[in-house]
Amino acid sequence: MHLRPLILATILPALLLTSAPAQEAPPQDTPTLRLGSNLVFVPAQVQTKKGEMIYGLTPQQFTLEDNGVPQKFRVDEDTDARGLSLVVVVQCSREAFAQFNRMKGLDAMVDDLTGGAPRQVAVVSYGSEPELIGDFTPDPDKLNHNLAQLEPCEDGGNVTLDAVAFANKLFDQDPKTSALTQTRRAILLIGETRDHGSKVKPETVIADLGRSNTVVDSVSFNPGKTTIIDSLIHGQFGPGPFGLLVMAVEAVRRNVPHTLASLTGGEYTNFSTQKGFDAGIHKLANHIHNYYLLSFQPVGPAGAPLTPGLHRLTVKVPDYPDAQIRSRLTYYAGEAPPPEVPDKPEKEKK
Image 1 (cartoon, rainbow, N blue to C red):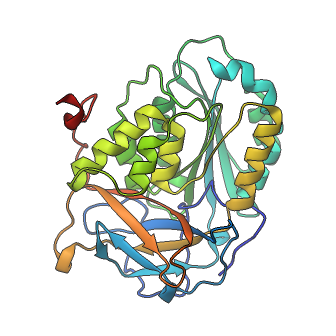
Image 2: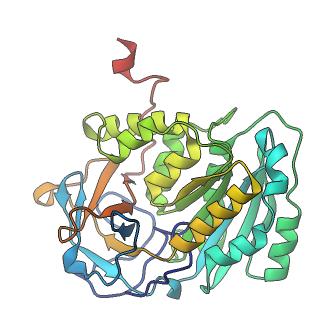
C-alpha cells in the first residue's frame, strides 16, 4: 500500500484508481457508472480509536457491501500514478466577504492537496452565480495567477449547489478529464454551510456526483448542523433508494459542504479564524493520501440487475472492529433523473 502519512487524505479520497493487488479485477475501467456496467471508486481511511492511521491492510482484511450485498473489489496501491483534475470552488459573497483575509496561502494549500501527482487545476468563484476564474491548467504560475484573481464580492446570493454542479460539468467539458478517461476528479469547496438561491436541486447534484466518482473536500466558515448527516452516516434512513435519497437531500439542505464530503468520501473541516483555517488545511493535508482505494463493479443480489437510484456503501475491517472508517457512503446507479424530493420528508409532514 503506497500511503503518504503527512500529506492529503481528503480532497481526493475517492477520486482515484490504479492497478494493484485485487480480490478480483473488474473487467472494465470507466469513471461514469451506468446500470451494471462500470466501476465505483471507494476511498477508505482507517484509524484507531485514538485517531492513528492503520497502514498495511491487505484486500482480504476489508469487506465492502452495496445495499447490504457483499461485493468483490480490488485495492489499488499507487493512486498518485493517475493524473488529478481539481476544481477549486470558493464563495465570494455573504460570510465569505469577512473571511477572505483568513484564507491566505490558498496556492500553497492546493500544492499540498495535490501532492506530487500530475495535475491540472481550475478555479471557480461564486455568489449569486458561479464564474470560471481560470480554466484547467497544469502550469503553477498560471494557477497562482488564477487563484490571485479570487476576491470578495458584495452579493447576497450563495449558490453552493449551482457552483458544485458547474464545477462537476467542467470535468466533462475538458478532454483530459472527460468520463472516458481515468483521471481522478476532485472538488475543493470553500464556503458557507447553507445554500441560498441555487436553481439546481440537491437530488440532482447528489446523483451527478454519485455517477461520476467525483470527490468533494470541503472547508466551511461555520460548523452548521450535523444531526441528519450523522444519521445518514450511521445508516438511520428510510427504506430503499428513495428513502436514502430523501435523507441525503435533507442533510444537504442543512449543511451542503459537510454532506457532499461525506457522501463522496471527502473530508470536511470548518473555521472562524485565521488559525482555524490554517489548522483545517493542515488537517486536510495530513489526511488526503492516507487512504485505501477500493474499486468494484456493482452486482445486485444473486447477480440480479442493479436497482436504479442512490446506493448505500459500507466498508468494514473485521480485524479492527473498533476502527474508525471514513469512506464513500453512496453512489448513484442509472442515467434517469433522480426523483424529486419534497421540501420535508413525508414522515415529518404527518
